[in-house]
Image 1: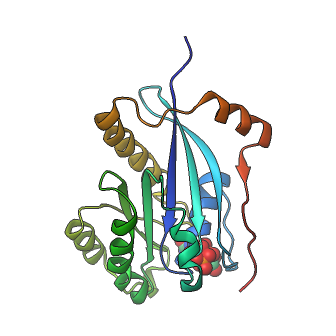
Image 2 (image 1 turned 90 degrees about the horizontal axis):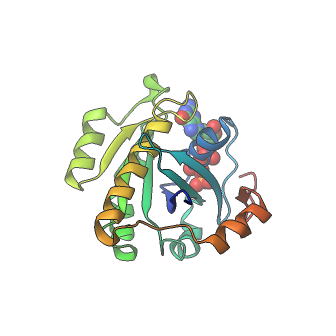
Length: 206
Ligand code: GTP
């Protein structure tokens, strides 16, 4: 019998420079880049996750541009998202204050069943921290979001964030349609042909 596979679309959102690209690179390639190369538009990478119960989940993770000027382009890609990682930088107050704006924008575009995780990134920079863990937790509680503090630089909590997000997403979608977003065979074949990641736009130095 063919093993059941799921495909979920996950978006990384948040202000420019909070570390979205680094977050993705740490998770998929286990690398870190010190230089800020501002994302232009968006691109995605694929990763397969095996859950404790043996279920295989393929996640398509979209890295979006945080700069305002790309907002109308990136908004088009919210459609069909199953999960969102909303990132702020614990050393940048403005990026935290903007979380409520991001939530409002997300709620306009996606359904309530989409799982959202709030992430405070750059916790390796403890001496520069301006957003406390308690403030982050409170914000997450107010908006009923999952919450993690992470560092794309050291890798702390990156896997946990995605694992919990995938588990919750699977739970939500299984409850609703009993099967989740099952990967279609045609799509599987196409992905095999094209390799595991695809770039739909370019990145450029700021
Ligand atoms: P846009 O593409 O403009 O939206 O930015 P982004 O959110 O993708 O930020 P990016 O991943 O390019 O990171 C911005 C800067 O923050 C880079 O200089 C990274 O090296 C740095 N950075 C990212 N994550 C961390 C982290 O966990 N700790 C520290 N100390 N620096 C980080």
